[in-house]
Length: 139
Image 1 (cartoon, one colour):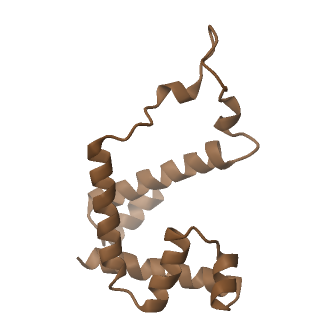
Image 2: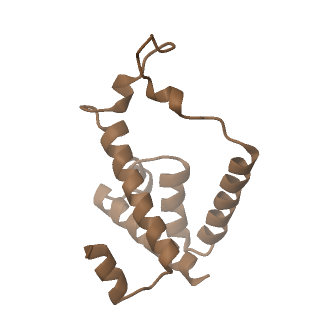
């Protein structure tokens, strides 16, 4: 039996759907890091600059990059939900989450802005995210 399943069955704190979604999300993130972000073996190295030549397969032609109205609405609802829950956090937690998530700053930039060490900035972000998860799970 999978260790994650054993751990979940010992203490099922969230619903099964949320738990399965979390695993799927983790797998997608792992695949993204392995195939997109990795410089040594990135799928982006296989992308061509023009239309595929005869017999050539180009991955970008398999994906529809257009967002439909449903996708935009769903995205807006998720953002609204997230910001509504961020407002329940302490000011320091809000600041770290918004600097990292909304402004896209790294721990080094956050540490410079707040006058703290990089390790402290990283730990504050981690704890703020944990508190945000707790707020969301309580609703």
